[in-house]
Image (cartoon, rainbow, N blue to C red; front, side, top):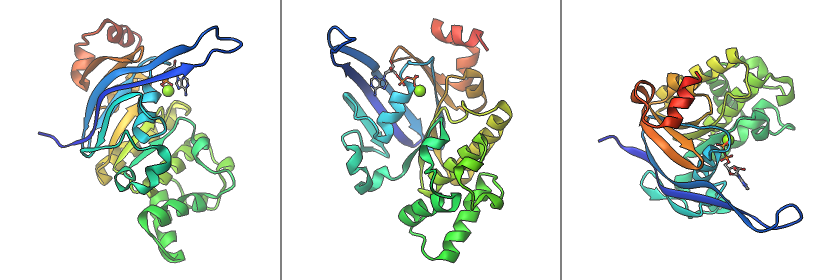
Length: 262
Ligand code: ADP
Ligand code: MG
């Protein structure tokens, strides 16, 4: 049986909107309401669903940005859902998880050059020391995401959206990850650039033995990359299938509606 890298059991994340000027009484939003799935090592696990269906909340619970209301999350068979974000850095086994966001500017410090952005995690996670070694690793990372070395001394503001997203992927790689949550990583990019980023992500997965949770609302994009796909609807999983059977034989009416639109 395939080795599991991530297991999510009965995950719930509810938000309470406190009563105030605009809200008459406390309101509970069941953003994620009892979701279970597992991801095999080396796999791309796709999470699709319309806006507000709870996809990002699942991703945020996995990386530790949100603490689940209930349920369990295991990373390489160790329970990680109880660790608060501020403790994360001290826990070795959570270091292997990283996240790429839709908007690359949110994860790139505007006051740092590409070199400085990559240097910090290279020192911290990969323990690289010395100018020469750091420069060599930075060049390698830049090459992996198919950027030209001329970009190394640039600030994020002088890069295009696609280039910025590739820097943010390089930054994540510098953190020595094994599992990456990609939350709509290409949704803010032009279609031509999307294809390039997807190709890079696919190659990195093979060459570096990475596993991905790939979140998108774009079902046609998912078809080209995911091994398994889970469809979310109103905070719940309405369908979980391998890629081929999902597209050839969808079982849930909501999936059929999504598929009819592509
Ligand atoms: P998706 O990524 O599928 O678009 P989200 O996970 O972002 O969906 O959101 C699911 C639901 O949870 C939405 O109704 C959203 O408004 C709500 N939600 C997400 N994060 C928060 C938060 N921090 N506080 C309150 N509500 C939230
Ligand atoms: Mg989202």
